[in-house]
Length: 218
Image (cartoon, rainbow, N blue to C red; front, side):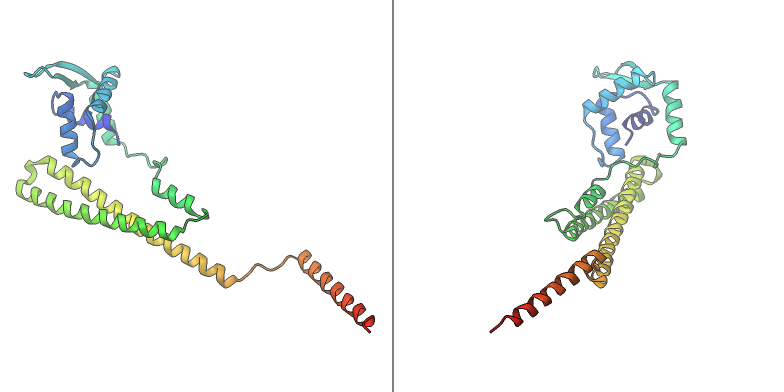
């Protein structure tokens, strides 16, 4: 998530102060990615250092206002025009958890998958209910309310994301079942030639010992 670009996009609508930017950012995204005021002002300081925003006086309550510069607009246009880089994906905790669960002592990876699936499905249901509320707001307000439309887009992305995660979990479980069935059908691994020869030698020596004992038996 690019906080700096999100703030630049909001500032393009006019000067704003830190708390106002936080409120508008969270309202636009439905508080999906909450910010604190410290994050906002730290980001504004960096943008000011990089020449992308400038302080632009104060409002009537004495809040310092920030405005986007021409350099900031160039950066914002570049962000909108270029696709989000997927060649270096962000770390995914669930993928890491399942990878570490494979072969981990005392861990049943199927339990991990089933527990996560229940949570993912519940989250998807919650997002779907929120989507219904967002749709109602959009139908009521029409195109006049950009924040409702923005929230709807974010919710739909979350729904698609959780749907994909649920399908992936189903795939993981099916993969494990197939691998387990294949391993059981293959049976125990065949002994190596050396082990077979050793077993044969042991058997021959045992037979010879039994024969010798029989000859000396009274």
